[in-house]
Length: 277
Ligand code: SF4
Ligand code: SF4
Ligand SMILES: [Zn+2]
Image (cartoon, rainbow, N blue to C red; front, side):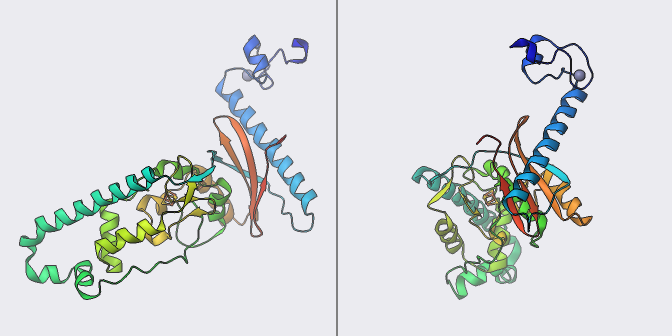
């Protein structure tokens, strides 16, 4: 079957090694590799637009621009006791660090300063349960607080960057300290809040709060990084939407291989399965 394989690079017409012939007909020049990746994306966008038009011609919005986001496996698994306890152990370390730093600064700050600490006030005054704010969007990944079309890109991506959240969820002492002060809650109640928010099932190998519908935490209880991080694909999509583009094609790619894609528009996120699946 070797005669079916291209003998020369599809982009620069340079001679191919036998391996390059079988690996897609592209030489090793980075410009040709990039041209091939771009061509793959264009093909996938045409396919996605076609599939969605056939699925629902009345509402399909044709996407003329694509962005690439990382693809990671997102299989749900029961959240193990080990991962729960690792998360709580990490949180305990943060809370201890905060408490220690307060102890160290207490004599210098004096009685008046301690009384002005809202978390301390709250721990003395109410000791009540932490309010569970579930009103924030349940999408995954980082983005600004206001819900907008770009946030749907994270939904289309299914939270690839959350895999780095592991059993720490990116929480840090400054962030937890800020939440304690802002919400005027005692540390033990905030700990109980996070414990109760741990889902029964989460995405295997990802952040403990990564569920099928996105992050189990409301934005105001997530880490700084969760609320600030935007991958390049999300940034590009945001720019397209700000320029008035109605629909953006989101490609999930692992290494150089497209896994699947989706079209994001005001009508929502429309997934298109990988060809052949
Ligand atoms: S920031 Fe990027 S990688 Fe993270 S969830 Fe959003 S689209 Fe995916
Ligand atoms: S806390 Fe939520 S947004 Fe942050 S990494 Fe975990 S699942 Fe993702
Ligand atoms: Zn080439």
